[in-house]
Picture 1: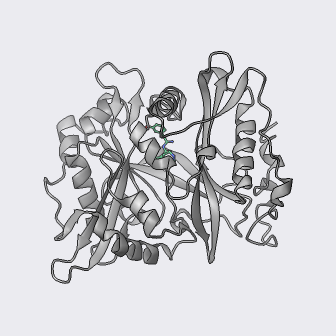
Picture 2: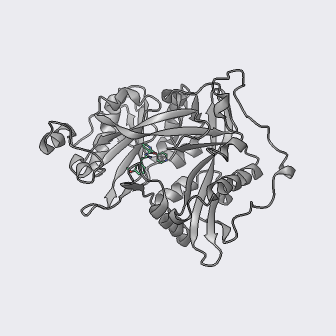
Length: 389
Ligand SMILES: COc1cccc(CC(=N)NC(=O)c2cccnc2OC2CCNCC2)c1
């Protein structure tokens, strides 16, 4: 039976789609903390819960190895996300994080880590209401333990631990359709190293196209072209916070970043997150911002290449520099940093540059979900101002 688990959860149900009489907001009220289940859910007998301390080199490595071998693959099982350890430490330890929300499942006898799920706290605005939510991510069950119904009990356990911190909503994304997406995005890819992308089967040579013609088509200048375009630095945090908060106001769902959040999520970290801004050479005002995160993919079964170096568009703000020019500078920097491909979702105003900057549509969609929060309508992807890792 499809969605046996999700029909028991406080999420929008397919049967409610189109019923605009249902109000926007929480689906269920908070439970008194004294009534929240105090002990962990039961796992099947061979398994036990563990808390993954990402500060521990050993545990962080166990998580890295589990995800490297068992996390999300593309639809044709040619690529698998290969989040780095530094990236995982960044993604899982934002301001106010709870170590207890980094949940692992071990085999009692061997102590092998065989499953993982995480939450991090985030302030998310939905229209005019700021809600403290858990951002749920990295749900991974070892390939050999699939369809043992571990995922539902892991989701219930992370929900229970989130409830214990008096948080009642969550946000998550998935490549699969579950009850019920608040929005569905198309992903797009911009080739930076077309020869490698074709060699590994990520892209195909276009009809009536030669390889040299394809390389020329995607060629980029050696230098960025916007005057005042530079790497973000710590002293830029207040100005970038103001710029980003103002820009994100236009979207129905968006993070409510303060300076601490901006310092964590947007200051450059080598091999994890790159961020740039435009400082007007005359007024020294910060007028524009762009950022992308580093998420390589393992290439499964290719003799010549093992890793696809991919950049993922994160948060971008344009107030003076045309967004197309700003994003072209982001492509130029990504190419200089030896990325093979630059990925983007059609969220925010990304639709305005995708085709012109030679992005091609990906072969899948990314669905956005809220837990225990109903939106009046399914949102257009351009109404989304939230990018999850
Ligand atoms: C190229 O290697 C891949 C390895 C695994 C999966 C996919 C396809 C895919 N599922 N892509 C995305 O979900 C995606 C495409 C563009 C931008 N962000 C994305 O996902 C992000 C955000 C959600 N969590 C994963 C990373 C591609």
